[in-house]
Structure formats: structure tokens, C-alpha cells
Image (tube, rainbow, N blue to C red; front, side, top):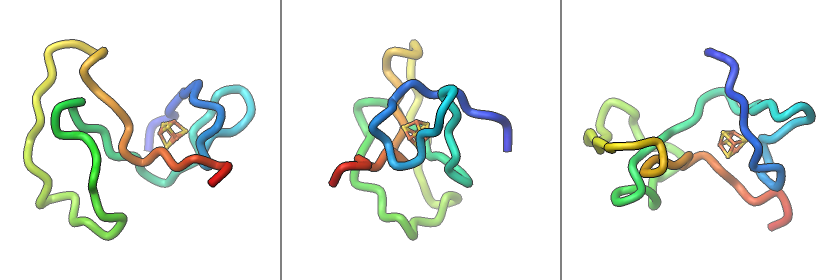
Amino acid sequence: MPEVACTVSNCKYWSQDNQCTAKQIIVQNDAQGGGISPNASLQSLAATPAYSSDETCCQTFKNAHQ
Ligand code: SF4
């Protein structure tokens, strides 16, 4: 997996120096983002095109304080 740099410091998977420690992350566009089961088959996810980076979001985020 490539290194993922992330600044969302309250995520359970965030680590010092802005490193993501998740084994994998799921990124969708903002319009379709959310509601993915942790056990979802990645191959079954529909394509969710975006037109700029502002329209994408990490679905693997988990609030470290909840
Ligand atoms: S899971 Fe997503 S939000 Fe959390 S640290 Fe990794 S890239 Fe950032």
C-alpha cells in the first residue's frame, strides 16, 4: 500500500507526522460517500467519479474519541 499522508488528526488511524496507519482506505466522492459497511466487498462498490479533489473523501475515517 502506498504511504497515505493525512492531516485528520482525530482519526483512529492517524499517527504522528501525518501518517495514516490503516491497512486500506476507501475513498468515494462526496455525493456517494458514507454508509459503507466495514465488511463491504471492495469489488462491489460502484464507481463514484469526482471532478476535483474537493469532491473526494475518506470513508475509513473513525473518530478516535467516540
Ligand atoms: S483512515 Fe482516512 S481519515 Fe483516517 S488517517 Fe487514514 S486517510 Fe486520514
